[in-house]
Image (tube, rainbow, N blue to C red; front, side):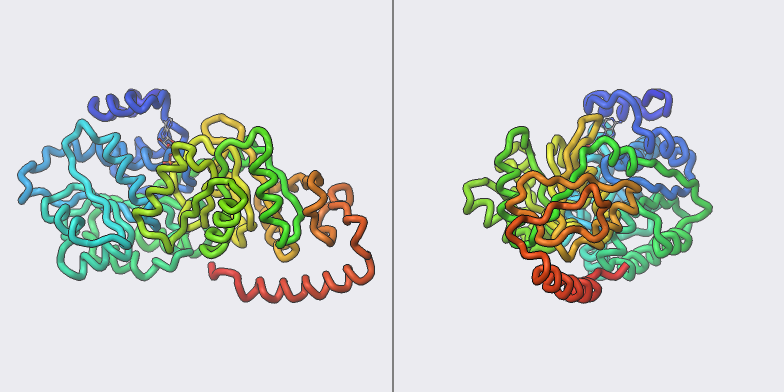
Amino acid sequence: MKFEDLLLAPSLLRSIAAEGYATPTPIQAQAIPHILAGCDLLGCAQTGTGKTAAFALPILHRLSQANLPTHKHSRKTRVLVLSPTRELASQIGESFQTYGRHTGLRLTVIFGGVGQQPQVKALRAGVEIIVATPGRLLDLMNQGHVDLSAVDTFVLDEADRMLDMGFIHDIRQVVARLPRRRQTLFFSATMPPDIRQLADTILNDPVKVQVTAESSTVDSIAQSVYFVDQRHKPALLQHLLRSDGMGRALVFTRTKHGADKVARHLEKAGIRAEAIHGNKSQAARQRSLEKFRSSSPPVLVATDVAARGLDIDRVSHVINFDLPNVPETYVHRIGRTGRAGATGVAISFCGGPERADLKMVERLIRMSIPVRTDHPQYAATSPPASAPAGQRHPRPNNTPQGAGGANNRKKQRWNRKARSFGRSPR
Ligand code: AMP
């Protein structure tokens, strides 16, 4: 299929050609005709599948054909896109701007963490498209700065992440203030029951579109795992980052504090790295991202929330410094490498307390991740109980089996307990 076959406006086809897109991705080929036909859509697709263009192109097509008023006082907001993070909202905004640059349509991106005045000014000037994170949008709505009465297309992107981040009430409040007659496009990488329930309440007889990027992404990535003691993780990371063939690496930690710590540790060791997480100002996050995009520094340490939806191309390695405790997150993380046909490398560090997380990931991706036994100096001091015999990590010679085993069992019991308290609600 070609983009021309989708019958998009010539102004959009020009932008698509300028972007160098040769053919629509599967989610685009499947979703665009239904969106153009005005259907509601339930899309199961993750970042990296081209889903932003899958909704942005038909939306821009429709608006560009609609003969909208051009005078600023008559411009009304017709499209609202909700996104869970500031970075993702910015990227969606950039995509709309890129694809719609020949359409004359206006857009603004609204998110928290920055002053609201420029956003209020942009809204006053009149925009057809708003891309927003839920919190700031509600703030501005409650202050009377946002008029959603003419919205006829509503997009909820990364719905699963929205729920993970506790946005459910905000979403419901926003939806309650949208016109009932509208087209709703709902995207989520995963479809657990709470997501389906939310989809049921806001979609009207949706067309369902699913792209199976998850397994194909996973297949094209060389995955491996080290069983490593928590305290040895920083040294192993350094070692790997210094090895040959390491290009741009994205390192994931579970916590913001962890991300800062790892970045500091690397800097101390002479490896240039930046941390990106929700506690950093919007400007600082954008700066880190821009620097990483130009490979200076070549290492970005990120939390899941901060990295979610970020369009970071040509990452050679994803390193899971900590394994995520939600298995789908593993798939999202490693999907950052091996994009667009390139093979990527995903290396995970599995500390003692993380064995159960690894098992859950392996169950989800339906394969056991090969265990690496090079760098035995950093090896975990107990074998993975769950790994098949042939894959067990060799116990270092200096670890006494008896005492170490008892200690480790105790440690594991404690860790299991700690983890069950720490697990995020889903
Ligand atoms: P997304 O899933 O929306 O985050 O898109 C992932 C990446 O794919 C972005 O860098 C887009 O610029 C790129 N992309 C989107 N559609 C296409 C296409 N049809 N051909 C090539 N690249 C694309």
